[in-house]
Image 1: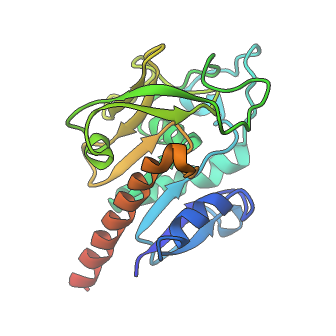
Image 2 (image 1 turned 30 degrees about the vertical axis):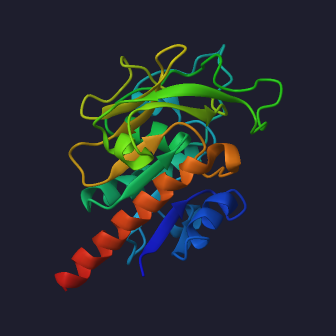
Length: 232
């Protein structure tokens, strides 16, 4: 059975991600700051969860004083080395919200420090607010979701990226219809590295297709484990 690492500052913030994995019969551990900067052994997939903003200094910019930037430098310090190790091992990786943004930064991209229209400013935790995005046909994400086309996703982030900020080696696999902001990325140079801007761990009826992404990630983690066992 594959073991999934869920990167999060603490168990409480990881709860919904853990439920998404355990409800599908898979084992998991929470990767946090107490584990240092080394990827735990015997993992077969990594989920990068949402959370506070990435320090703009990491991607070569100063913090915009007019943006509501709330950074977590401590998290950056341990999470970036762990992500780089997972990428070097060609391990399946799913980045969600901040996790997608971290993927873009580690691949050499930048971020827009403040976006309008992608989060309910008055009620930032309101999970009933959503917007429509377009899935690019022919991408891994479109295949996972069934096809390219239009889907609705929740609106709970205030940072993101456009074409100008996207890391050159990454492929944009979904866009916001209203402003062209990139809503999902994937790495064509890795077996399974996908980031989504929306909070995929929310799996109420409105967002029931979000589970397809978790299932595809776990199936790829199965294959990763099998490959390791076949060469041991």
